[in-house]
Figure 1 (tube, rainbow, N blue to C red):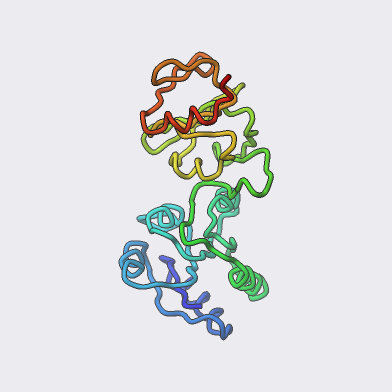
Figure 2 (cartoon, one colour):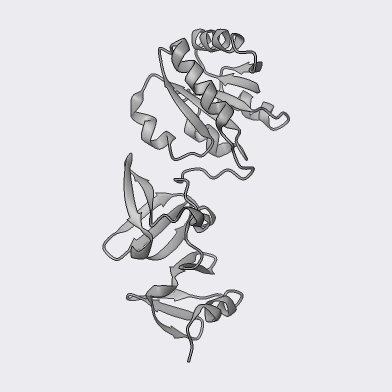
Length: 237
């Protein structure tokens, strides 16, 4: 695997480089002291694995992952254990190493990297869920806590800028994500995108009039393009 190191500390880069040199399956192609240099490199070159420091002057490791398209496999490196929960939200992150790193722990990370299969369209800031795994719930990160939300309880998902508002029977949640990312995670038989800014739970519809639906006490617009699919979902007499 071709790999790169991104860490603003020279000593840290040297330690990782030395560990990489003991693994024949790894080929270190570049080292970077800041994220911007690495982004420019990745725009023109493909790599299989990134050893990425979380704390850097200009970018955090998470900022870096969100900046690049289709990130490769990533092993996070940090001296702070408090980011472990957030790290698990990124499909591209295969392991989380806490400094000082031992050779034994590094070896485990490489095993995970070899075993990981990263899809070409990698989603970030989401817990990996698919409709095929029969999950009845998903998790969102709220103030570094993973909150479980059951699919059946969700009535509306609304996009507002860089955030989505997940509205449930008991509480609403605001998450930094996109409507597309959460649409891919929701069960297709239960949820439908009816507007560029709205996904609805079709079981929660109370009333339909013209180009809008009533869910709870909220009127949700339905675009002309999405109305035919909505009508197909309804059990009409």
